[in-house]
Structure formats: C-alpha cells, structure tokens
Image (tube, rainbow, N blue to C red; front, side, top):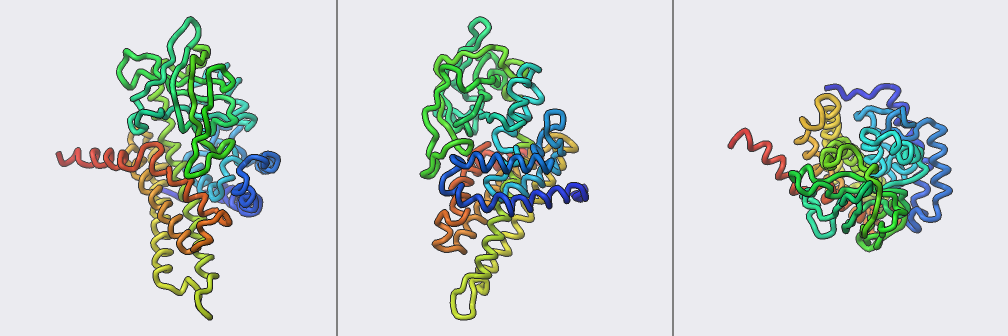
Length: 396
C-alpha cells in the first residue's frame, strides 16, 4: 500500500495551498460578514485565475472539462483547498455539484449531458440534490413519501423535502422520488432532473442553521413539490435505480467530505498553535507554556494524522477493490474524522477564548456549519451500528 505523492501532484498541491493562502483566506472577513452575496464578481475573478492555472474542476473527468484526477490525488486536493470555506467553490468542486456531476457523467443521456452537465462543470450554473424528507428519517432513506406519478410522457411530482443543499440560485435539482411503489423498497425510487423554474417547484425557505439561513450556494432549502410536471425523459438511468445510483455516489463522496474535514482540522490546529504561541498570560509567559495547552495540541495533531491515514487507506481501497468491499472503512472515516474535526474546532475556540466566539476568526463559522457532519449522510450512531454488525458476523 503506497501513499507516495508524485512530484507532479505535489507541485499541484503547492500551487493550490499558495493560492488559498494568498487569494482566498484574505476574502474570508467579507464572506463571514455578508456571505457570498455581493462577492460574485470577486469569486468569479478567482475562479478565472484557477482556470488560467489549469487547476479547475480537479475531481471531474477530462472529457467534460475537468482535471481527471484519481481518487487518491483528489483526496489530497480537498485537504488543501478546504482550509477555507471559499476553496471548493472557487476550484469548481463544491457539494452538491460535485456529486451531481459524477452521476450525470455516468448515467445521463447525451441530451441530458448537453443541457445540464456541460454548463454545470463549466461553472455557468449550479445544482442541488433533493432527497431528505421533512417528516421521515434520513437514516432510513427508503422511507420516502415524495412521488413521481406517470402521466403520459411526463412525471407529476408531489412531495415535501428539506435540506436540499444549494437550492437557492440553482438551475436544477436532482430529485429522489418514488416512481415504482409496487416494487421492493430499494427499487421504488428514481432520480429525476427537475429544473428549478418548473411550475410547482417551490422553495419555502432557506432553513436557518444555528441562527443563520444564508443565501446562495451555502444554504439548505425546504421545498414543496406541488403537481410539478417534468418530462419522463428527465429520469437518470433506469427507472427504479435511484438507490443504486445513490450508493455509487456515496463512497467517493465520503472520501472528499472527510478530507475536507482533515483540511479544516489542520487549519484550526494551525490557528490554535499560533494563538497559543502569541497570547500573553503573564509577564514573559504565553499560553503555549501551559501543559494542558500542550496536551491539547499533541492530541489534536496525532488524531488529525490518524484521520488522514484512515481516509487515504479507504481511498486506496475504493480505487483498488471497489466501493462495496470498502463499506466498513468508509463507515469508519465518516464518524471518526467528523468527531476529530469537532474536537479540534472546539479546542481551537477554547484556546482563542472570547475571540473564538466571534466572527473575527473563521472558528465560530466552522463550529456552527460543521456540527452537521455528525448527522448528514447518516448519523454517527447508524455508521457505528453498521460497523459493529459487520465485525460481529465473525463471532455470532
């Protein structure tokens, strides 16, 4: 198992890290104050700089305008550019567009690719993913009330979704809805492309997350589908294969999520160390001289290192033996890395004291936005239970 980083990849990572430090982190103060609204011109300018450096869309295949990186290399990219909340968007690989591009590339028809995939990869439009239901458990996604009923050449969609991430300003949604109610539970739902200007696609609100509803791509919308009519030609892949497609999306997606969390953790540890080294607590004495602070720094550093190795191991397995054979390792990283990140963020805030609670640093932003990491894509407890069941098979 070789985790050696090639010279070419290291040069790319160095370029990305330098760009994040010099071009994006200085924009964070404005982003924290006003969100992405009003920053469109500045962000588009940075995106063009990324294109000029030939670093645009690192996750996506070359045949649709991306860099075509393998999973191991793209994981390292996420670690680098996720050190700022602006990184993924500026480099053209933010969620949920990244996952939507992946499934459109594999399952879309030529007509669907021309209309939806090409402009999405180019960054000319955004998309959203509409799966989570308001009154049903996200941990059991086969429980779904949203329906897409056939009516001639159309589907008529009715349902109530929320946490449809990035719906505000998106050009289309990829919707999970029941199309085949008489089939087995895992064969009932399909993925359907729904342009957001379709009558009956109604954004009720951007859900307020810990006091912040936001605007634009960093939001989570509640949506009512009310007799929303789209062509049956908008289905992705075979009808009834919605969950099959979703499972293929989850493995690499979790690698990228977890390496993003590693990048965030490293940023927060760096901030913690700088603050501890500079913060005076008595004449001639700084916070870093306190043993408890040293213990925190050592624990956080070792756990971040362990997290990165776990994620790279899972990425290596996906790349070499496939997603199905890596389910246990994917579950490991989902709950382990999320908890490490939250611990590091919390410790960094503690070291910063009152400053850590303000928006004068990025820490409070991470604290409120990343807490959901232990819930979305399945709560920690569901992943731990799944891992335990697989381990216990050898003993029962």
